[in-house]
Length: 334
Image (cartoon, rainbow, N blue to C red):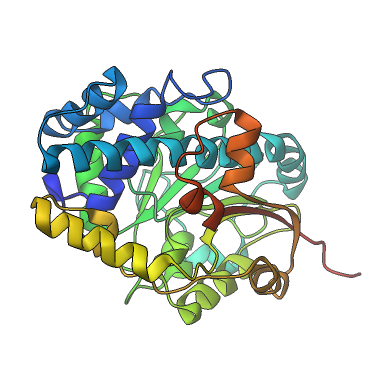
């Protein structure tokens, strides 16, 4: 998991994929000027090569070139689908958040940050603002690039070491609104609910939850536990956006082949080193979010989304197996 500068190697490759796609794939709907800014100089060279379309000589460098190019083809539809789900929810959620009124939730009062900027984010969450929580944020750039979030508190949840690295990478990059609230959580041992409350997240205010690039690396039990916390901290009108993978009979063979190529070429492939712990059918994921009070609004494969964007679909298996689910919190019966 450790990569250059302390970041997750997978997070770096995902960021490289977004940098490759920026301005090239679906430019009318995909835009991420922050991706290159979050990369270290040593991580940008391969991005420049892919963007220029000049494949390097040698088997090993060519393998890395193709991995990053493929990642760009996956990241364009994945990012667009999530961004648009956020944009569609903000107006409605903003109205509901205003109705929630001022004050701190009683259940969270003991964890609320100090008025002088204590806790992870500093200061109370504005009463009339919706909230965005990014679970496993990695090198996500939404708080720095989505103008729609200028008045919306953004909570980034990730491992403490990953967050320290991200702060260093961000440097002088200015967020669109107030700085995101970094919520340091070691998912293997820390209490996510308590950490969110301590950072100022309010249960009475609708939340947009973004869970991207994480679910495949969690067990079903870990997914269920996280969904329980999400459900418990979601006011009516909240939206949950989940990226997950579906079962693929050829996946084990594909991972074995990728590991073999990586070993033969002496090039590290971070995707082969990540533990693939859970896959879900659309019906199973619908049930998993449904028991936590969320109704599915849409659930599309990345292949369908890529075709809609007219972006490359050369890596059809990866695109077909990845899905983006969007679900909205159902009001509790009166």
